[in-house]
Amino acid sequence: MSSNDDTLVNKQCVPCHGGIAALTPAEAGKMLGRLLVSKEGGWQLVEDGRALKREFKFADFYRTMSFVNAVAHIANAQDHHPDIECGWGYCRIRYQTHAIGGLHENDFICAAKIDALSAA
Image 1 (cartoon, rainbow, N blue to C red):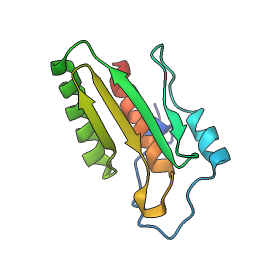
Image 2: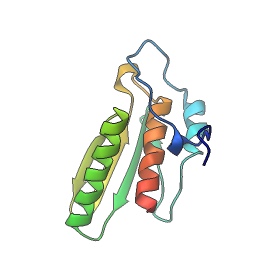
Image 3: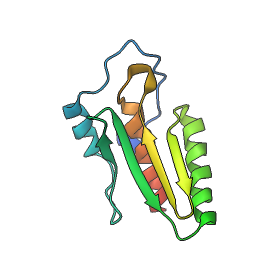
Image 4: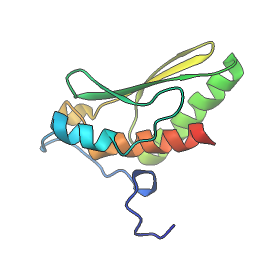
């Protein structure tokens, strides 16, 4: 892929310290359409379009924790961190840009990177 590829998975997060508007529900819905949908489902807009959430299923605890560690690596590399809830065989990820109280393109960039991870 070229370096000017504008797919979400190829973008990098930019610092967001507030002072800008969150995506509207309509804008968030368009961004949601750019994310991968798998046979297990996909990302959902929640909290009236102010957050993004997805649940992943795994065969065992080891695979779950391996995935969680890979998500943590993505989050640190992008400096954009989700809320993560996990246990035996599942991981729930919720993204929201807290500085703006809603969704930003960064949330969708990280979601796309996690989709690529889970598809591998």
